[in-house]
Each structure stands twice: as C-alpha cells, then as structure tokens.
Amino acid sequence: MIEEFGKAQIEDIKAIEKRYNVHLPSEYVSFLEASNGGIVDKSGSNQVLIEDLNATINIDVLYGVNTGESASNVETWMEKLKEDMMEGSIIIGDDLMQGMIVMICEGEFEGIYYWDDSFQFEESTDEENTYWIAKDFLSFLDMIR
Image (cartoon, rainbow, N blue to C red; front, side, top):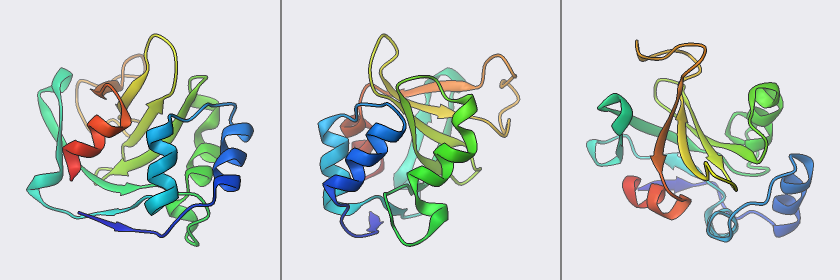
C-alpha cells in the first residue's frame, strides 16, 4: 500500500523531463499524474529482492513532483546527486537504509535499479554499487503493492 502524495500536473512532469534531459516512460508519468508518489507501507509485503546480492530491501518513499515536502521530491534528490547520475536516468525513490531507487529510462540498461550509495551492503564498492531490480516501472510497482 502507498500513502499517495496527491496528483502531479503534466506540466510539472514535463519540466522534470526537460531539466534532466530524460524521457520518462508513460507508465511512470501516469503513476505521477494519479498519485504523485507516496510513502510505502512498511511491511514484509513491500520487500524487494535484489538478485545480485541475494538480499531484500524495503522501499520507503516513491518521490513525486512538487509534493510540498522537499525530501519527497524527485528534483531535490536529482539536484543533490546529479553529478553521479548516468545520462537518461532519474532518482524515483529510496529504501529504509537510504539507498536510492533509480530508473534508467532508455538504452541498453533500461530498468529499475537499487543504488547503494551509502554502502549498506558489504559487496558494494566505489566501482560497483548499483543493482538491477526490475525491467520496468510497472514490474517494480507490482513488487511493492
């Protein structure tokens, strides 16, 4: 279950795409328009498997656009971490350990990833700390609903 932030305006979503030079998948745009992200219920049902680590994470927040709370906005985290971001990607949320959920929107690596930027897992290093979660946003959303 997700405690939604409200509804995002398409103009605000387009502004994010333009600002970060990213083309958001239509299912993610629809999600933002309908719920604008939200706080994910903290339960065993929202655990997401990271196959490469044979470990699970609990999703905390799915960021939105102009939510009224800066810590819940895509733009806040993109501004803080944009130097470390791959072209065509956007930060869409975080987990309880403060790792980031990143969506690569196009190209060979398209999909949803866990970015262990705080090195919570001992396997993570400066060279390798990003792990595949799902092929697309809807598959990821299914994991936490």
